[in-house]
Structures are given as structure tokens and as C-alpha cells.
Amino acid sequence: MTVSFGGQRHQFQCPLCDLSIAGSRGGTPRARIRAAWDLHLEGCDGRIVDPIRLRAMTRDAAREEAERLRETESPADD
Image (cartoon, rainbow, N blue to C red; front, top):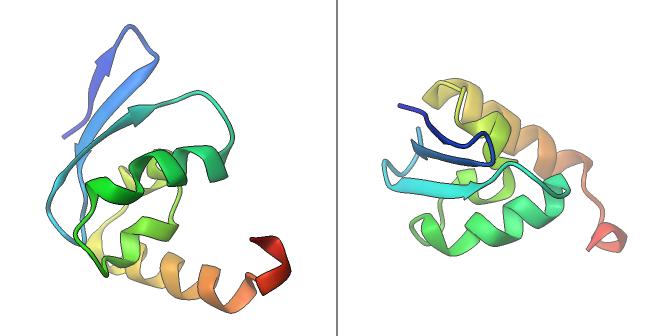
């Protein structure tokens, strides 16, 4: 479920670890990922997906996106 707070914040349940994730809609995808990192369970694949995109994904779609990101990210991107 998604809840908007003045259009700048969002809260949803991660489709992979089922924890409540809250974050800002502003900033870059990388900044949003960093801000939500500790809100997921350790080892959750949802940690590497932009929370704005993750909130609208099914469990299968989130797993596929995380796998795609792992394959396309290079160590130089960090």
C-alpha cells in the first residue's frame, strides 16, 4: 500500500522482505536507495532497487529487476 505525505514522502511494504519502507520522492535513484537501505531486512534484494519503482512491483518483478541490476552494475559505478 502506498501513502503520500504532501507528495514528497512515500511509504509502502517491500514486496520481497515485507517490511515497511518510507522515503523521499526527491533526489536521485541512488540517493533514495541509500536512504532506504537499512529499512529492508539484511540480504533483501529490494535494497538495490529504487524505492519509487519498487513500491509498484510484484515480488517476481522486484526479483527480476534486482537480478538485472546486479548484471548491469559494474564495480566502477559505486
